Image 1 (cartoon, helix red, strand yellow):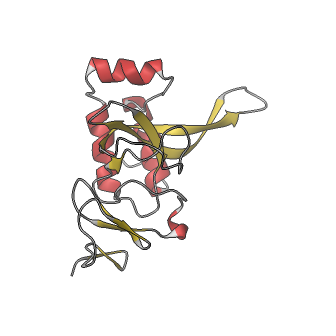
Image 2 (cartoon, rainbow, N blue to C red):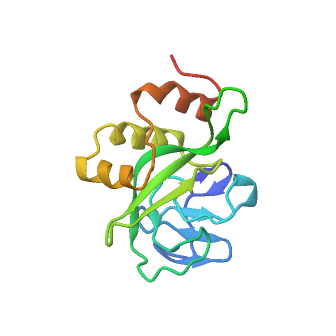
Image 3 (tube, rainbow, N blue to C red):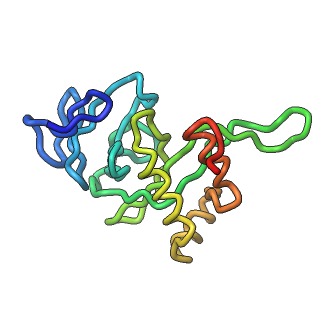
Length: 166
């Protein structure tokens, strides 16, 4: 059996797309994703390996009211806006966030990364987002989602690894 952070990568009890009290099997890659409160997200709905999500929420994270249920591709990276610096007025940024787009209905969702998300997969999403199709980029911009670009690469690596990569 394969393990990641001492957690099984597969589950003998559930198959792709299924959920139980312990976690879920990724709809996209089939990896078992356990519900672990210490991983930093209360409403986990994305895979720690491939970062794909499932369209389960509508207006509020964790509401599980979506009727769609389709896969949501990780299309970009953004940072959570935490406010403004009281002296300079500059925007303050917090957690790294994944931007997902539903492959069936096109809905956009933003999810905070979890502590056990694969950093190489996050960096791959970032790299791919630098080449987003104009229509997807325009959709995200219209929703006031500020994507990380090449100029923020060191900020992203600092958030992921504690220091900018050389």
